[in-house]
Figure 1 (cartoon, rainbow, N blue to C red):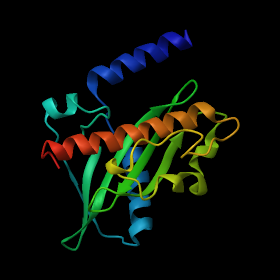
Figure 2 (figure 1 turned 60 degrees about the horizontal axis):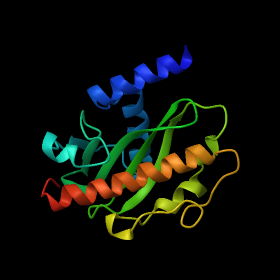
Figure 3 (figure 1 turned 180 degrees about the vertical axis):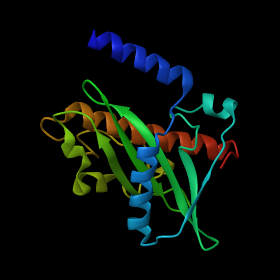
Figure 4 (figure 1 turned 45 degrees about the vertical axis):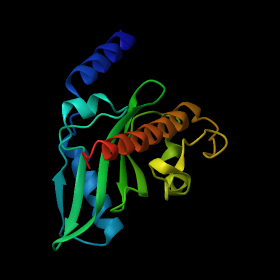
Length: 176
């Protein structure tokens, strides 16, 4: 029954796109406030055409890619995504500077009993400074494995690789 429910959830996710729940938006906003050390900022959703979205490995829609500004100054961009773990999924935030170079990544909600170590600041710092021109990040070479969290580590690495590749595609299509 659990496998059936996960399959149905996955199909619904693929058919409807990723909808960012309000709880995640609030967690992301707290991380943005903390990272930029600001309390007043705006997030402007970036709309990606369906045609361009179809060419990217990451899913864009429903406000999960956004521009961050404060007092009229462009600070960077953010992306909220969802990736699979062993039996569930986890939600994450990636912050970029104005040139789409990763400045911070954060696991917002992790739903597994094991593997939550991927949420550690130290492990996530491996993604800082990466961009679409960095090349693909390789598990156990560029990205340090974590015992007991192999699936989640591979999943987060794939999610970041897909996101960086997607940003590159969108830039080449003048969508960003």
